[in-house]
Amino acid sequence: NTVGDSAYAWQQIQQGNVPSLFYLDRLNRPTPQVLLGQQLLGIANACIDISDGLEQDLSHILKHSNVGATINLADIPLSDEMITYIENTHDWCTVLAGGDDYELCFTVPVESLKDLEAVKNKTNIQLTQIGVVTKSGGLSRLGYFDQECKSYQHF
Image (cartoon, rainbow, N blue to C red; front, side, top):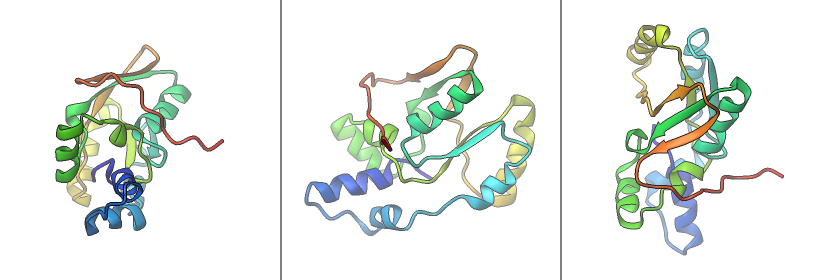
């Protein structure tokens, strides 16, 4: 349940490299998180799949909920190769703006955290808190990266 893998694979292909089978599978055979989505019913305030990039898809939730959020880059779940890539390039845009991961990004009120833990135990799906919802609008990041990333635009 990591993000950025599909975008990383596509980036490698565009550069003439052959990604590992893990990354090719993440690009060509994404696993929709249907079971998790069903289990979140009645627990999550909002939920979206990460198809257009983490920041853009999270921003849809924030805009329609009239709230903001702060995400901590260090808490975003990454694959081993993606960690190495970021350490070498400092390019977080592949993670923040790359899409086609189809992992779920969702918000849960504090009073539902016990229910969320039960979902995690029942499904054995890795769940990671990457930030907090704030009253002020917009999305901010904690971490050493302030570059603006361009996510996928449909039109």
